[in-house]
Image (cartoon, rainbow, N blue to C red):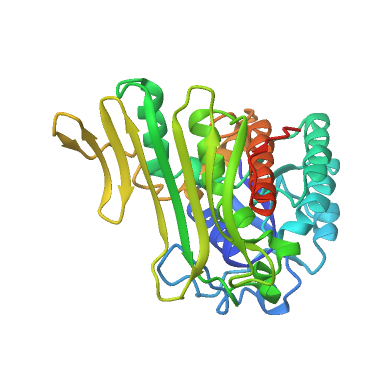
Length: 350
């Protein structure tokens, strides 16, 4: 089996999560690492924390044979890699994506893709012209329960969708990252852009792109001025009622919640703390199959799929396309505009 050589940029929560997943995938190896933190460059991730995942992820990383760089652009220019994986604060994404594509690398970038609509256009043009594979870490599309629900909804066996609610509620991430960048609206875009973006993306993935959005939210509850909690209604011509809620204002001891309820003509799909179930209108309750248990999270599934595509030279088309990510991010931007204007906002797709 040909080895897929990965250059990883950033070793925070997502970067260290990706590293450990790559370690578990046959034929995949992180061969180059860039990080501004000297301790992380030595494999010390003991101070890395996150808001989801569980387990002890603080064990030192084995840096044997790994080329180490302080400067990400130096890694992109010099490292012998097949793909670049970008796991750094959002404002650096565009620069590193453009450099990696120009260097002829396949690129996997963590979400959110970027901070502005203008940057979406720049990245879109670069991806179209590069001839390289490009995916973004919209991992919830690949999360077992969500992927199963998408398949069931698309099958039509539940009939038409009547309403759907997606929720993503996190304990506080204050202090959880390098320079506390999540709490800086200019860098993270608040919970609306960094957290809620997953559910906006799911809404578009499940139901297509909405015409407009109506959002209510609040800025500055825990961050410097970010939208820290948001609730949105997505407008579709067929009048189905689709909503999503996200926020990261709860105290640190409150469990992370990712949940959904999708009500259809013949039954309801629901994921909550009790598990994932299909409730038929007749009273029957099922637990749908979620696929390969050896790939327990969307992170595992998206990274295995992307590295398989790189190895086999097959253009990725499962879970997402670049164009679909560009569109869903435009919807999030419209939601933030709606929060600030207190008015419905038509989505400007780029």
